[in-house]
Amino acid sequence: MGRRWPAIVLIGLLVAAAGLPLVIPLGYIKDILFYVFLYILLGQGFNVLAGYTGLVSLGQAAFFGMGALVGRMLWVAGLPFYLSIGAGGLAAMIVSAIIGFPCLRLKGAYFSMGTLALTIICNLMATNVFVTESFLPPAYMAGYSNTTRYYAALVLALASTIMVWRLASSKLGIGMVAVREDSDAAGSLGVYVFRRKLQALLISAFTTGVAGALFAYYQVALYYYQGFSPLWSFDAILVTFIGGSGTFFGPVYGAIFYVGLKEIFALTLGKGHVVIFGIIFILVVLFFPRGLASVWEKLSLIMGGGKKTVRPDATKCDT
Image (cartoon, rainbow, N blue to C red; front, side, top):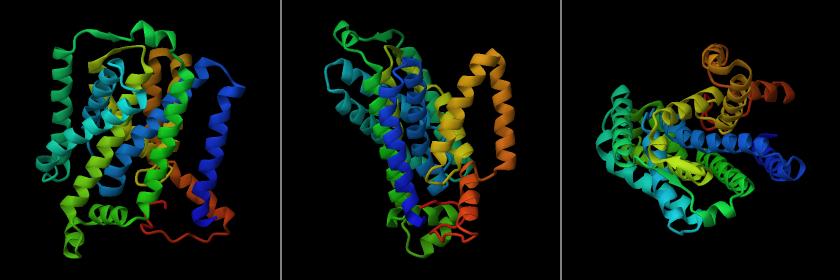
């Protein structure tokens, strides 16, 4: 199917997901799917940074929390929700630009440690400053609908996935992959290494901030420090690496797998589901080191008669 299959699959998913609330009006199902879409958005944000540029950030929670904080405040203050969600993404991008210049000069584990420190600092500040719970005003409660939030999450998840698809074959994306493979060699070939890293960080932070603002828009009651929990950083990593880091559909597979199993195990196993999920995660990494996206690649090879499609990055990047 070549380059057409992502578009075909996206159209199919869009039609199915858009029509699902009309067929299954159950709020519980829509709630689960909302979190699938949220984690797709979160995973794609991390995928741009780690999958395409090779920078493993543990500071995604800082961007997520900043988006939730700014987006929620502006929305409750009367700004339309779509503008408040965008403002949450911009706020996260500004934070990433401020910390990007010092942190991006660090390499490997030192970069990860620097971004983790950012998450811890933001979490401590939010916990001590924003101690009260944010409730929706009565005017918002009267018109609250999870269907509106469902479609908002669907549109944003699709937009982030299309963004990664376009990025993979663009000059910017190819430059990011070159930096990931060998930054010194990329620099010697004329790639602006620091600029590509900063651009990846800004895109990642904006996408993650939008996810945070979407999460805050979904909640009836919210403690602002919830968005700064380090778990959001680790969830982004899990979703991306389970699905396939540096692949187009990886975060989509990862989000479905993560949210689906987490929900099933939580209902059937109670608190013990964390241990079982951890074991399954280890097994997935062992048997599918390139993520669940590699399963699709193998099926595509079988259906295509064993002919492998040539891609800009034949080891990881789906275009």
